[in-house]
Image (cartoon, rainbow, N blue to C red):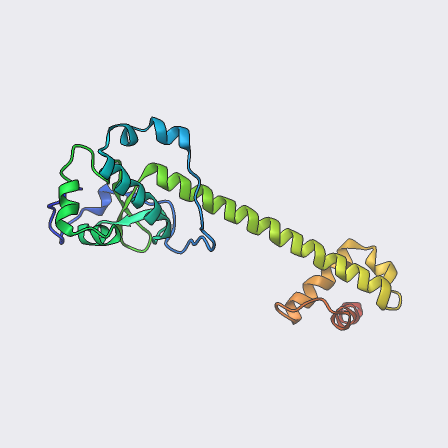
Length: 205
């Protein structure tokens, strides 16, 4: 991006790639991000950028983690200068260097209609963080369901007359869980609700 580019531009967005991360995707507890030290040490940016450029460039990598979409930066000199707490003229001087703080950043189309800046490595890091979040969420959901079904089986066997037989039937236990989830969205599987579910499911259809 040319530092002296006017703030208002006519852009043919058809020539820009779509950014792969949605503006709706969030990282709830993003206290750190994956950093490949070997890759960083071997990068042209680290080896050839002036020390001050390298520092501000790294700051931009970090700032992008909290942006929307995750991993992008605003395509705006004033905003970037503000984020780095630099006077605009100082930012523009940095952008005249042979290697700038925006080395390898490029313009992309985001699904919220914005044109923003993306960096291939920063995008890769953000995608891996989101994949990890989704994997963990799925594991947590599976664990919660396992505990819920165990609770239903135990309560059937211990607290409901004739429930020991039902507790051994995985299909029936799942049906009871589904009934409770529908009748009491977000509610726990209490003994009373388990009894209510079993009575409802035992009624002839």
